[in-house]
Length: 183
Image (cartoon, rainbow, N blue to C red; front, side, top):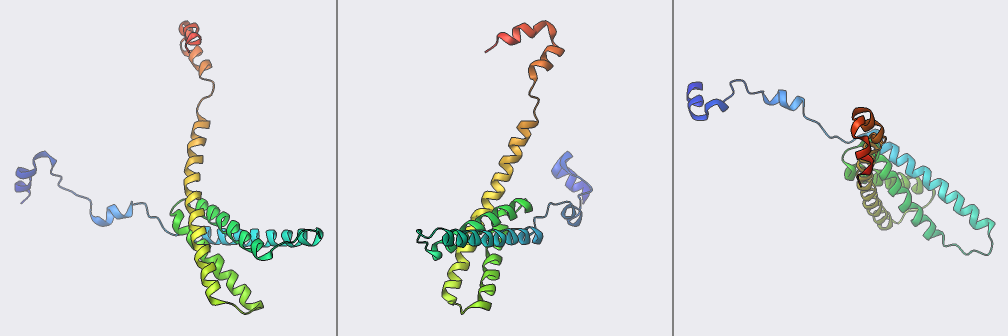
């Protein structure tokens, strides 16, 4: 049988192909990093609490300002989920869309559960908030992955030798004057 394969395939025939299990063992596996999701959710909750406390203190301190608290809460929700998804995906380094969406979903569920302890919940509003949080988290995760790779490329450019004239002068001292006159 192997002689027949050699006749058909010629020199391209390989006797020992690696098995599926050997090749699968070395494949890069992209999985959801739960610590990155927890980090993103914790950061988003921290940002929300700090922003709301500062917003309420500012609204109480400045009496002439009429502040719409619903707008403040919506803006804080959006910003904290975007930043949480961004940092969670940047920490995971893979699957930015999935990590960001999970950060948004987890953030919304934790927020709804905390709110359920204090007040009655409008479930349609909670569903809407959850969908918005998942969408914003996915956007933040996508941006986090893309900016992470951009930063890596910029860091590579920063590691490049900046003093190329000095290196050229040491290697080719006779051509150094010609090098300086080039545009």
